[in-house]
Amino acid sequence: MLDGVDAVVIFAGHRQYYSLEPRQLQELSGQTHPVIVDGRNVVEPDAFIDAGFV
Image 1 (tube, rainbow, N blue to C red):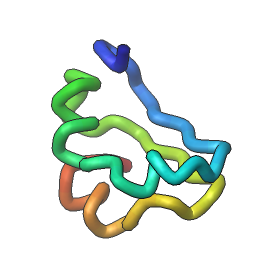
Image 2: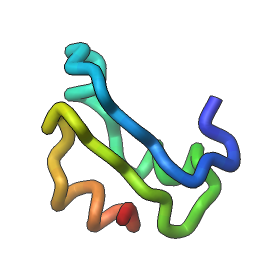
Image 3: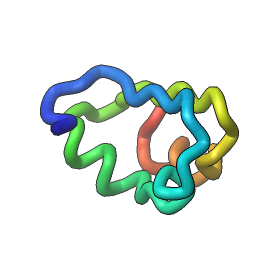
Image 4: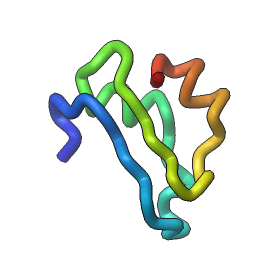
């Protein structure tokens, strides 16, 4: 589902997004520094930055 993506974009506030695991998403993307755009403020920014997200 996320294999090889350059960015993860969140524009919906579904409750499932609040439990996203940064390391798991980073591994699924296959990128060292994937981009995350959180238009709904559902993720913890520091956790995603620590996992390598930009």
